[in-house]
Amino acid sequence: EAGVAQSPRYKIIEKRQSVAFWCNPISGHATLYWYQQILGQGPKLLIQFQNNGVVDDSQLPKDRFSAERLKGVDSTLKIQPAKLEDSAVYLCASSLDYGSSGNTIYFGEGSWLTVV
Amino acid sequence: KQEVTQIPAALSVPEGENLVLNCSFTDSAIYNLQWFRQDPGKGLTSLLLIQSSQREQTSGRLNASLDKSSGRSTLYIAASQPGDSATYLCAVRPRSGGGADGLTFGKGTHLIIQP
Image (tube, rainbow over all chains, first blue to last red; front, side, top):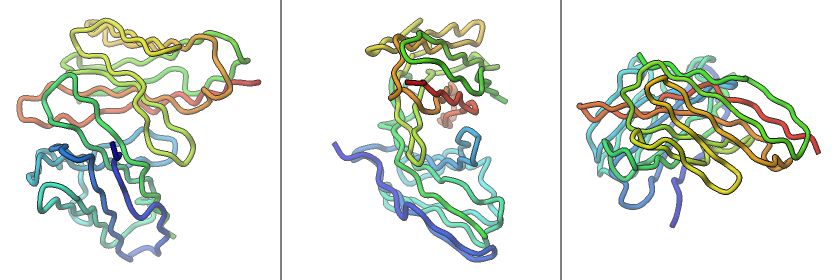
C-alpha cells in the first residue's frame, strides 16, 4: 500500500516569496491534515479536511496561508508571502475517517521549507 | 486547550538497557493516544496506538500504557539497541463532536542509544 506522498521534499525561498506544497493521501482516506513542525517542537495542526470540506482551520494563519482539497483527494498548501518564521517542515497526514478511536493517522515524509 | 508534555526532553543510555519515556496530557477527553518515532530528516512513523478504552498495547520490544484518568502514558523500550536512536513523540487525538480531531503533540524525547 502506497503511503502519503508529498512534494517538493525541500524548498529554499526568500522572504516575501510564495511557495506551494502538494500532498497525495493514502487511497481511500477521507481525512487529510496539514501540520507544521518547527525545529525542536512537536507538529502543530494547521488544517483538517474531511473529503473536500474544511473541518478545522483554527490554527491556520489565514493572512498568509491557504489550503485546498478540491476533489477530495490531493491537497495543496500555499504560503504567500513567506516570513522567516515559516521555516519548518510541513507534514501531510491522512486517516481513513475521523471520529473513530481505532483509526491510525499516517504521515508523509514532509516538505522542508527554509525562508532566507 | 489540550497540552501534552514529554519527559525527559533528551535521554542517552548504553545499549541493552530498558527505558521508559513519559507523556502527560491535560484533557482526558481523548479518542486515542499514539506514540510516533521520527528519524532525522524523516516523517513520523506510528509505533503504537492505544484506544481510550484500552490500558496498554505491545509491539515487539515496545509497550505503551495509558492511564486516561490521570492523563499519563508511558512508552517502555526493552533491551534498547542503537537503531532505536530517534525522537519519540506522543500525541493525543481529541474526542470532538464537530469532527475536528487533529492530534496534539508533545515536544518529543530525543533518545540516543550508545553502542
